[in-house]
Length: 348
Image (cartoon, rainbow, N blue to C red; front, side, top):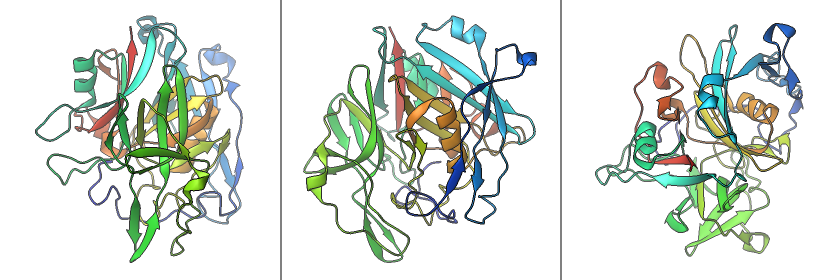
């Protein structure tokens, strides 16, 4: 979703998100589908929420069947594989790409639009101009500004192009922020952390501030942070999966009071235990795909192998292009919203 006011839309708050509220999850592991799919598909059940006593918590498990896109995968290096997922009853349609960042001919970078008029271009334009084999949209941005401004950290080619969001106001209260970010510290190495900037230096945090709605945390103690030496990085948020478990840090990253936790088209990025990159796009606001909320997105990322993951810009921005082909249907069609930043994978 594009960002109109400081990167956030107004909207309702989801119950019990994050570490500070007891939220019980039952997360299944990756399992093979029925014999009818003959091992060509993967059955990925969403996690069932238990406890909290809300409609969110009472949601039943929903299976998503993932199948490799064989024809497309044959045109890609062996270290890049694309999967199409669907659920006909929800309904839901999604894609994810697993990218072996350790392969010598594969690398992923954070890229920014070179359109000097408005700082925005389509994901297909990024793919065409850069010759990238896989591109998804990146971080939040301001569409009410021309040229657009990025909302949150943006580092490309070792240059800090945009600082992290320093603080957010909610009901006249100021919350100092450390939001989820994905970074590439050297070729083949992915890190997902909470990030801030100070005096043109990027910092990584072991956990986000302990904010709650109406209760800002204490000021950040930079003795707990580490300088984050990244070649490329961008932030969005919130975090979805942390150290192999679902941990949606909506409140801590001050996304409460916005529509970001609600059901939307989605883009997410994550890393697997072996260091591979996972990029996922979920269609939404369509008769064939309703979209997902943050907890559902977290469960999907966990179940396809992510041990750390974060939410990227979504809504009408969610776009996946592979080998020059638009795979999903942004806003239900082929029209692509212009975005400011993207994650681009190069298959040299």
